[in-house]
Structures are given as structure tokens and as C-alpha cells.
Length: 473
Image (cartoon, rainbow, N blue to C red):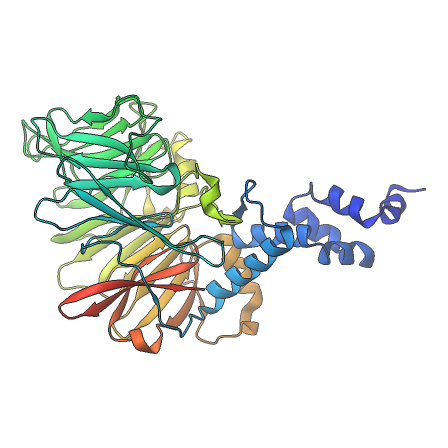
């Protein structure tokens, strides 16, 4: 008996178990061999779930206890939600976790410092998700010292509080859920020596927190990376407005080993520099496209990608989550009297250069840059998705994930909505654009404020204040 015949005679349950060890591309190839194997794969929720995750650019959550059939159903609803952008017409859920106009998003948590005369309270809210089985929850944490800034990572239950009242600014390391001292930290507070952190610039990734710090001895600024568990300063890049040709304007983590810094050099085109803070001295530098950043520049900064870098607490993520290995790097450039320019690159492509021997590469060489003119306004970035909203309540999702773009191309004219189009323009990092409108009650008053794995957070203007509302797929 041939091997092919014995495979066809095996019980279906055993065949599925064998096929579950194959990657998605191999499963699709096996489906083409004969009608029996095609039917086995097509009728198996486990195998269809594996194929669907790969096509959607998502990762399975191994600790989640949701049955496979329910996971597959949730995945299909997730895909329909983002492909069709059919938002509910029901009244949106109010999200305002505290008395503040500045709310920070990490994973599925919104948090802010309450805007009191002497702010000592952090208000937080876990954004609910019916799709992924996450319940709505609010809580407040009050401390004995004044809060000047906060940095947090919801998936590590990590809250870093900045206090500037003392001789040396302090970073207090706490649990986001309770406000207690974080058990992974060897010290409850880390002093920031020889400088003051700039508010709103803190970033955290894995074991590391990075800040813009203004040294006490100069007018410039530097990027400082610390291990929040030990308090050790692992890297620092100095910059000054006098004597040093570069001025740092913005930074962001690329992953838990690399940090990206935008810098300007007089009237020369700005540069993106990639540093490995675990291997001091290593740097890869890219010159931003000519003609994009002609002085005078108004703004040059990263648009923060709010998708988790490396999930730690997998229980918060539901049955599946965005692939952390593929992230979009978005650089925002505002020019005087012109529309905003955005430059997009794939994190996977950028990392491939840090591992090579190339030290200087032009963005115009076609390896992954994409300058795009957007009307005035801001964009939100999550994973490989970009969302922008017009004043008329129309919003657009630009999806840069290569597998999802390829699938959109294959759908071609069969896609249900004619207002969705493949956006190419001879660029090396194509995207698929979907257009939709906010619900009637929010048009003209609502602006997209954040996006999460499966929800849109909308800021609604209500004179003289505003509130945050949630729209879920």
C-alpha cells in the first residue's frame, strides 16, 4: 500500500492531528491534491483557524481556553469587522476614565492623571471587548506624591510614575492594577540623575523604559534607556544645541533591543537612526526622502504604535492578537502651509538592516519607504493598520500587512464595497484602503482618538468639554 493510500485510509481525527503540524501554506497545497483531503481540511475548525490566522497576520494565544470552533467564529467576525467597517448604530459606550484631556492607551487600557490642583490620582479603564471576551472595568489609584507624568504597559501590569518635586526626579515603579510596588522591580523608585525628563516622552518596552532628558548642564536633550527592574542606565545618547550637529526631535522603540531616534542637522534632510541599546556603538542610519522635509519644519515625530511589542500577560489578549513581529513605523512631518506628510516603513524591514553591514541606506532605494500626503489631522497606528478621520466623520483604514494586501488584491472586484480600493502608486510598501462613516449621531462631532485590536475610540466634542466613546465590531 502506498503512503498516499494509507493517508487516505486514516481516521479523520488522526489525519487532522497530522495536518495540524503543517504550516498554512502547506495546508493550502495539500487541499489541492484530492477531494477527500480538501474536504477534511475545509471541514476542520482547527485547520481552518490556523489558515485564517496566517492570512490575517494574527497570532494564536496558547493560554486562552476558548474552544477552537468559537475561536474560528471570533476570527471570522474580526475579519468581517475590519474588512467591512460596519460599526454599530447603537449608542456608543462612554469611556471617560478620569478628569483629564490627555488619555494614554496601552494594549486595551486607557489611563490618565486626574487634572486636579495637586494631581495624585491615576484613573484607568479596561476597554471591553465582546469579541475577545474582555469585560469592562474602571479603577483609580491614589498616591502620596504629586504626579507629573505616567508611563505604563498594561500587559506587564506596569505603571511608572514620574515625580519632579525632589532634587532628583524619580520614577516610581508600581502595579497598574493595584498601585502596589511592582514585584519584578528591585527598587521602588529610580532617580533620574543629572537631568529632568520631558513630560509625555516616556516609552516602555519589555524590561526597558526610555525618556527624553534635559541635562542640568546644557540646553539640549538626550535619550536615556533604563532597565526598570534594576534601575540600571543601559544606554544614553547625548545631544546638544551647541557643538553637536544633530538635534533629537522624537524617539520610539522598534523592539526590545532597538530604539529609533529622529534627528535634524541644520537645513539638511532629517535622519532616522536605529540604535541597539544592548550592543553599545551599533547604529544604522537612514536619510529621509529629499523634498519631504524642507525647512522650516513644524513637527517631526513618530506616531506611536499602540500594539503590544512582546505580550507578557497573555490572559488579557483573548483568543488571538496582532503579530508583534510585524509593526508599522510611521513618521509624521508637518510643513508650514502644506498638508501633513507621513512616511511608513515595516519594522521587519528596518530590523533586517540592523543585522547587516550597511550603515547608511537611502529611504528612496525602494526597500520599504512610502511618503504619503494626508490632509491636516493626525493618524492612529496599531500593528500594521493606520486609521485617519476627516472632519465630516468619514474615516479611512490603511492596512499595510503584506498578507492582507495580497488577499485584497486577489479579491479584486469581488469585494463587497466599492469604496474600498487597493492603493499602490508605484510605492514599495503598498496598502489596502477601506472607507467608512461614523454613526449618524457622531458625525460632525466625533474624531477617531485611538484604535485597539477590535475597537475604535472616538473623541466626541460637547461644548465646553469632550468625552471618549467606544465603537466595537
